[in-house]
Length: 111
Length: 112
Image 1 (cartoon, rainbow over the protein chains, first blue to last red):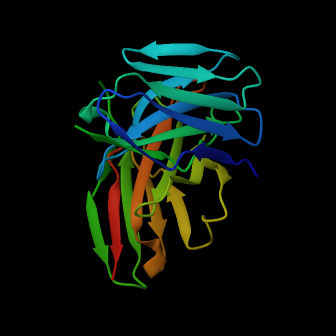
Image 2: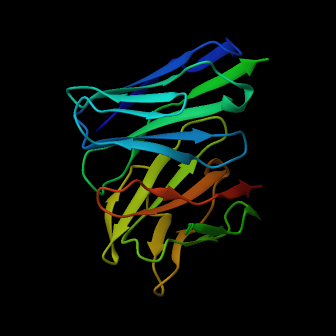
């Protein structure tokens, strides 16, 4: 079945440093979503990427979808303490199919 | 903004008992999902539901699990005879084609 791998599992950064998490799928995806989950909370939708090679930005967050639609990345510029949490990618093979989640990258930011 | 709502927020049940988790998806959504997240682990797909039937299910979704849309608004997950390993956060989600899924706040299920 489809597998989605995400690295690194943990990332500790000093406030102001950049952060990147990478997501790789075993199969070509129809779309990929990124979610942020705070401890004790539920996954909160950040963005969806659909097109090959797509790049989207949300303030300090930059999301990329690979040309082959099998990998994606989330980059945070100049991290802040409010960025702490676990970032999950989730890929779908079809337009309304299940999402297969990556293992998540837990980000901690030291002030 | 419309939300997916789940009740209860926390359910404590004795092992072997039946439990029903409830969800009210966003009203114009057609696709419904259940996921679970064991503490400290990733979110795992359980089942998807469309047009009043299961469209896909995972290996986790065995005969102990069932889903139902009893009326036009609720979407339920039933676990027939709970086991200790069923303890997890259960998330309901709903969506439309080509649109991201929206998640509820989850129900924390604790099996004693």
